[in-house]
Amino acid sequence: MPKKIRLGVIGGGGDSLIGVLHRVASFINDNYEIVGAVFNPDYEQNVAFAKEIDVPTNRIYKDFDTLVEEELKLPEDERIQVCSVLTPNFLHFPMAKKLLDNGFHVICEKPMTMDYEEAKTLQEAHKNSGKVFALTHTYTGYPMVRQMREMIKNGELGKIHKVDARYYQGWINTVIHDKEKRSTVWRLDPTKAGISSCMGDIGVHAFNMVEFTTGLQVKSLLCDFNYLYEDNQMDVDGTVLIRMDEHVKGVIRSSQVATGEENGLAIAIYGEKGALRWEQEKPNFLYKMSDTEPVQVYKPGHAYNSELSLGASKMPPGHPEGIFDSMANIYLGAAKAIRGEEYNDGEFPTMEDGVRGMNFIEGTVASHKQGNVWVKMD
Image (tube, rainbow, N blue to C red):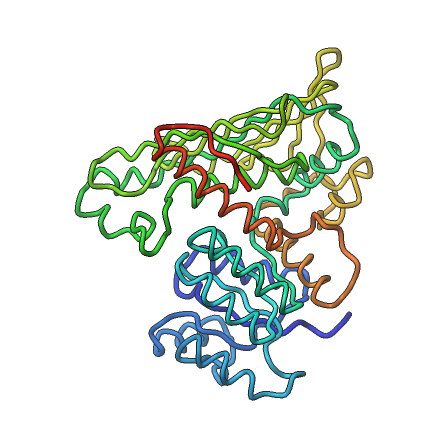
C-alpha cells in the first residue's frame, strides 16, 4: 500500500454534516491522513474540535492564509498534498485558487464558485497548476449511477430521446415562511450563497447527473423559479426545460419547499431501445425498462456490472452501500490521480464539471429574469 496522502481540511468542523461526510469518506479506502486543518474560524473551537476527533493540534492553524504560509515552509515530503474545501460557497473560489497557485491539489465542495466568470478564472489557474482538482458531486460515486453511465455509453438504450431529473427537498419550509428566520439562513443570502439557492445548491446536482450519465451536454435551457415571498431574493423552487440536441430534450425539477420530501434526487433516461431509472433514496437499485421485456433490476457487486461500477462497490452483493461510500469513491478516484495512477474519467467530477455547473446556474437565473426565455449555454 502506498504511503497515505497528506490531507488538509478547510471548514467542516463542529456538527457540520458535510464535514463528517468528507472525513469518513477520506478514511474508507485508507488513502488519506488528515495532517493539518482550519476546521473553524474561531481558533479555540478549531483546536478543541481537532482534539475531539483525534487530529494532532500542532498543524491546526488560526486561519486559511496561515495554513498555506506555514505548510509551504515545510519540506515537500511533509507538507499537505491536497486540501478539501468545505466552507460556505463564497469562500470556495478564493481558497481553491490560492491552493492551486501554491501547488496544492484540491478537493472542493460545490457549487465550485459564486459565478461563471470565477469558474473560468479558476479553470485557468487549474490548467497552469498541473494539479488535480476534484469537485464533490457526491452522487456520481454511487455504483449504480456509474453502471448507468457505462450502459448508456455502450449503447444499450440506443439513441437518447428524453431525460427527466428531479431533486426535491422540503427543509427550507421550516424557515422560509418566517421573515425573521429566512433573513438569518446563509443559503438565502446572495452574498454568501451566490445568485441561486435551490438551483445552485441541489438543482445543479440533477444537472450534473444528466450530463454524467448520458455523456451529452445541455445546449440551451428555459427556467421558471418560485421565490414565495417578495423580500426573498433567492429561488427555493424551479423547473428547467433543457435541450441537449435537436431531438434530445428533457426537464430538471428542483425544490427546497417540496413538503415532506427528504433527499429526493432521481433520474430517468429514455432511449429508442430502452430506459434506465435510478433514485438516490434507493441507491442500490437501477431499473432497466423496455416496451417488450419485463423490468430488469441491477444491483451493486454483481459480476454483470461494469468495471467502473464494480470498482465503486466495497461489499459483496446484498450489503447496502450509501452516501459515505459514494463520497469515498470520489476520494478514491482523486487519490489515483494524485498518485499518477490510471483511472476512469468517471471516477471523480472535474474542473470541467464545475465550470459547466456554474454556466447552468447562471443560465437558469438569466432565463427566469428575462421572462422565462430560452438561453444558450456556452
